[in-house]
Image (cartoon, rainbow, N blue to C red; front, side):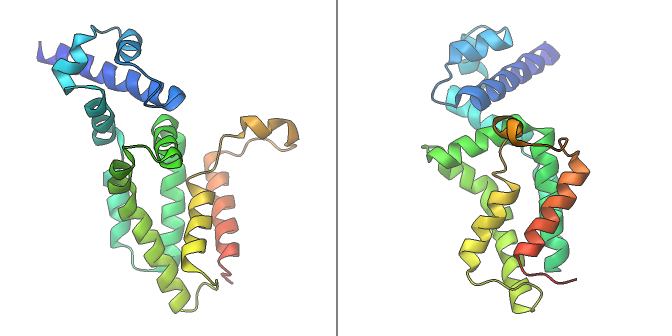
Length: 195
């Protein structure tokens, strides 16, 4: 029974993650989640206590804290910036639904935004520290730390899906390694880094 229970809990979480990414939290009902998961509606309350707890559990289960925590040991700003770019792009490609959920919550400033801050602020604070240290050490050259942080975050975290712009593109979609290399080069150029 325990294995079946864990399996059903995971099905509910996966269904909720998919629907929250597509429709947003507010536009997704418990009934829709359970239909997608093939679960009885009462199981959301039984396993999680409600829809908001499902939302929080998704981040407990799927947010890659272990990968990102390794970045806190890095001291060198150049290595740190490149590492954050790489990890965020990998996460964005491996779990686009989780990223879409986060982006939706952050952009619309929902009641769950404080939960998003708890999740992402530590790594964004580390990114800010890398930028500040790099500027103080003469590695990077930029005026405003706050604006630069937003520009870098926009490049790595809020990079949107290409589908809307496909008709304008003449090049093939880059693979993940190419995208990491291109994003790193773009960000470092914007930071005034001279190698």
